[in-house]
Image 1 (cartoon, rainbow, N blue to C red):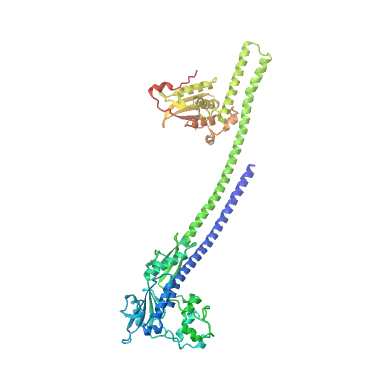
Image 2 (spheres, rainbow, N blue to C red):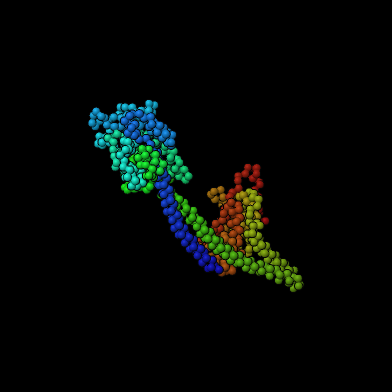
Length: 594
C-alpha cells in the first residue's frame, strides 16, 4: 500500500512537471502572438492618425490653390467663396493662418514679391515679405519656381499656380484613367504647372495643428482599446516635442506627418481637384475616375514631423513581458499549489499510517497492561469467593493485592482519559506551592527500592496552575524515571527559579539515557523507545505526551536532555504566579504529601 501511494505521488509530480513545461511553452506562444497583435494594432492606429492628419493638409493643398486668372486680376472674390467653403468643411477652424501669392518681380530679376489674400477686401494685397515665409527665400534663389511641397519650418504648403487649361490634348487624356499621381504628371507634361515661378503659399497655424487638430485625431483613433498607448509628435530636426512628451527611442510605431498624401485621396477629392474647364475640355466621352496607381508613383514628400506611439508600460515588449511573467507566476503558482497539495497529502497519509501503527501498538500495549492486573484481581477474587483463602493474614494479603492492582488499573485509565482530553487541559488556575505539588506526586509514585533525592531552592516563588493537572505531569515524569532509571533506582528532583519569570522542575535518572535519533519523538503520542520495546517495559507511550500537553496548557514547556550512559533529565518549565498583595499571601495553596 505504501509503495503504491509513493509511486502514485511520484507520477503525479512528474505529470505536474510536464504540465509546467507545456504551460510555459503555450504562454510563450501566447505572448508572441500578443506582441505581434499589439505591434500591428499600434502601427495601424499610428497610420490612421497620420492619414487623418495629412488628409486635412492635403485637402488644403487641393482646395486652396490660386488659379492664374485670380493671380492676374488680383480679384479674389471667387477664391474667398472657395476658402469659406473649405473652412466650413474643415475639422478645425483656424487651420489656415494666411494665404499668399508669391511671384517674381517684373522690375528686377531674382527678386520676389508677396501678395496676401485679404478676406475682408477679397483681393490679393501686396505686402512686405512676411517673416513666416523666410524659409522660402533659399529655395527661391535656386529654383525658378518651387514645386508642390510642404515647408515644415513655417509650416506652409507651396502650390504652383496653373495657367488656364487650354492646351491639354484630348486624345492623350483618353489613354488611361487618372490617379492623383498621374493627374499631376499629365498636368506637368502638358505645361499646365510650369507657370513662370508663381505659387500659392498656404500658411498653416502651428498652434492649431499641434494643439487642436492632433489631439482631436489622436483621441478619436486611440478610442476603443487604444488608450494603452501614449502618442507624441517630435520635430526630427530639432528633437523638440510638438505634441505629447518626447521620449527616447523610436516607440512601438512611428510614421511621418505633415506630408502631401495625394495617393490616398478618394474619388470625391480627386473630382473636386479637377477644374470644370478640364471636364469641359475632356468632354463627356472620357470619364475621370480613381484607380490604382498607374506608372511610377510620385516621390514621397520629405517630412520633419514624426508621430510616435509608445505603450504606457514603456513599450509593447515590456508590457508583453510583464503579462507573461504575471501569467507564468499565476500558472506555476497553481502548479506549485497542486504539487504542495500532493506533498502534503503524501506526508499526511504517511503520518496517518504512522499514527495508525502507533494506535495499534497502543491498543496492544494497553490490552496487555489491562489483562495482567485484571487476571490477578480475578484470580484473587475467585480464591476469596471459593473459600480457598480463609486465614485473616491471607485475606489481608489478597485484599492488598486486589487494591494494588486496582490502583494500577486506575492509573492506566487516568492516562488514557488524560490523553483523550478529559484531564489534560488546565482547569481553574490558582497560585500554587510547587514544592507541595511535587511532594504529593512523589508520594503517589513511591515504590519499594526507589530513592528520591530532592533539591528545592529556598524562597521558591509560587506558580499559577491547576494542582491536579500539574501533579499528574510531575507524576508522569517520576513514573518514566522509575521505569527506565536503571538498576540503582535513584531519582533526583530539583526545583529552582529560572530566567524569564519561570520556575523549573527537573527529574533526572541514572538510566542508559535516550538515543539521539529518538529525542525529537519522545513527546509524540504512542511513541516508545527502542530499549523500552526490547525490554518489554510496561507503558502505553502516553505519559510524556500528556506532560507536554499540560505544560503547553499552562503556558510552559517540557524539554529533555541526555548523554549516552549518563541517564536522562526532563525539565518542566512553568510561569510564575503574578505578585500578590501582602494580605493575600495566605491564598497560596499548599498540598502536603499527606
